[in-house]
Image 1: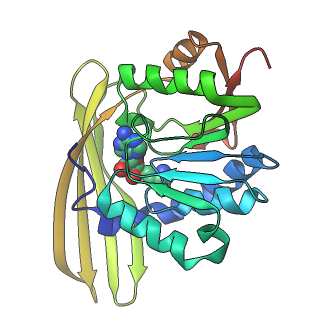
Image 2: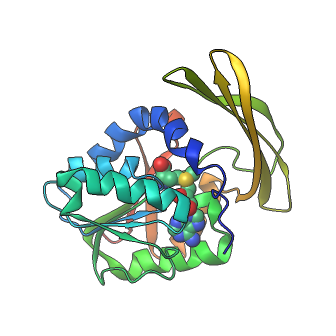
Length: 241
Ligand SMILES: C[S@@+](CC[C@H](N)C(=O)[O-])C[C@H]1O[C@@H](n2cnc3c(N)ncnc32)[C@H](O)[C@@H]1O
């Protein structure tokens, strides 16, 4: 499988960090008291993994991350923190190929669901229905757009580290019935002077709340919104619980 983050991993973790300031508290609330095990789907550099660990007392965590570049950040972050090192296992496969615990307290899928098309989502929902413990839940977010429409270019990140400033820009265009193509540009400035520019593109499956609800319903799962509305976060659990 091609790694869409192979060239951009250097920027992804630092640029997603400010978003975790907002995503962290509602995720922590959603997981409070969860006994685990907890799977972090597409853990990236592990900013969400760290929230999961801090919001649960001693739940075992499985952080699944297929991108070798981002997994390097993840493994270093886990290794660097004794509170993570003893509890977090990093797996390099995709979520549908990873050897996961038979029973799960929670599954976290933040900023990742657009990597999965309808067939893969169907398999993920089946996995939740089969493995979530009683009272278990999944937490995910839906990122706009929910329909295959164009997204005009905008700056989504502006981060300063030392004398360098890193800007992330993105735009998207429709690329099929349920897909968009993202075009990202990462610019590096040193003392205000542009010294680097990287362009990468990747495909993203769009998913609306209504379609998510229908897909989950077919597996006996339901969803509720959680956290501030603008974050698009949802709790998923069995309807019969
Ligand atoms: C935008 S990043 C989000 C990372 C992290 N969840 C966060 O919010 O900081 C999307 C992640 O999904 C991962 N991913 C892509 N396909 C995957 C798959 N089949 N199984 C698990 N993770 C996958 C990517 O490698 C990437 O790390």
